Length: 52
Length: 375
Image (cartoon, rainbow over all chains, first blue to last red; front, side, top):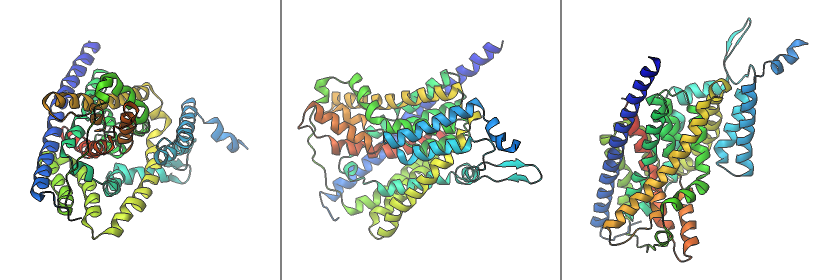
């Protein structure tokens, strides 16, 4: 019975961890992707100027 | 005369193990130059907190009551109560980083994201091994390759394994020059490692450099609110650096603040290296899982670069993807060295630095996203 409970808890944790993996990687790519696009636009808008 | 022997007789075998671990960390710091600024204070602290009736910890004395120990106090105030120490260190780190190579080549941003893969795969493996989900998440964050992030996330999640997690994070960061070449060679061919990448950076205006930390903070804050403290402090440090009117503050953040916090952080973390907490099978498992996280971060970055190459006209050397882990600047140096070893005209350093600093941002975002799952 104890083993069954342990396996159930582990299985729940693994399911949650797999969910975290999917959502987590998606979240990171969304955040970093948006930043990358904005930076690319800023660089394009500045048109090769360099004021520093 | 009994009081002379009281301490000696009170030593347990677990404490002896901690003295050996402390001595090993000091040895690695001094002889091997492995993250000495952190491993040396941690090693010495490991000895301090494991002396019987140690005065650096709170003790209850007969007729006096509770006395306060400095390391316990530092831990309670600087980490437990507010996570102030790792966060303040982020201001210094932000002030040290030049995001120029990344801004001039925005494609490199993606590798910072891809190389966080090891974090999440390790969380799954830790859960499979039977760790509680919060502990599994804390262990996975070792893969952020970023000590302050690992400490902060494990503290916020109330993990019982802050000590082993911090030791693993800093040890493997120091071992990046050994871990990454092995992992990269496992998943690349010689031909791929010889791919040349001409460096043609776009010019970056001062306005872009100033806007960048503000934009990153706002976007990270809106998408992953829990990352605001980590990303925000990192970007605040960078804004001080780039604004051009706070040179003194920038210098203070880069040197005085970062050095002071680093000095205290190692000693403070040693509070979680008390023998009764540290010496157990879980610690060994955490060290193994930390290595797994670093290896799969590297593999994640490399494989992502290979996938991009299927669709891209300008091929990317997949080794650059491995620099997306946050261990800055060791990882970028490793990639440059490996590139030159394959072809002495193949300089990948600036590309790798771009991916590497992207990893700094992505690892802080990853920390925030992991925290967000429990909010």
